[in-house]
Image (cartoon, rainbow, N blue to C red; front, side, top):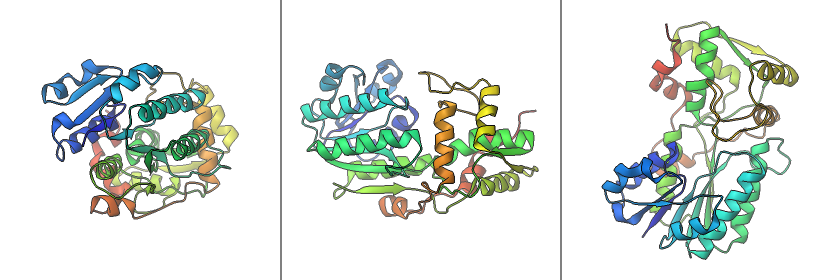
Length: 306
């Protein structure tokens, strides 16, 4: 059985590759990336590393040749370009006769969700349903590591966790758990047509997250609730682009535009992401990590640099 991993030079791709190498022979792994040089060490271990660009359909058809199962890792560019890229990848997989596609989607899938990102995942899920290829949806909640390494350190440094989300909850999930769930789906039978909600073990508000950050760091962190308009103004004042620009990565913000983040916060506040499941344990055989556990694991990143 040959397994394709797209976006293989990214963080998720590298992590899942290491898990897959514990389960399959290196020659049965096909890593697809725009930057094969970054995966030279894996090629030396016998893994197939192939060039593929989601903006170049022909490159993907060649890259996917001979693969039976595929992990389609969603691309970063929220909006029309991402939907077009995913369409290109799915069509190339069909042309290459890939038998099963697992897709890293999102929790909170609902046609009325105000979150921009959900429109992309809805479109991709529907395209997979119509493709004729077996599929599995891995609906990942917000990564706990994003909270631990981007949002919490700023709050600990300033003493304030500023958010426009009042009561909305998220079951923050460890990226490691998302990766482990994906590896399980790719290497075990019986997942065709399934939609797994890959979440942490408990629903938490951002107010809860601030309290955990204070507890783990030993610092005072005040939760400050602002309006959505006030939060947008803060992003504008900080110079955060309103829409994602390829390659952007701002400290404590990550690769997202402010309008995308604000649409997400509105969806959280409206309850669209209040989803908590046992699917991590179902797929991996172990309980999902809590946000507190991830904070403790990332304690060094949490603390302000003196």
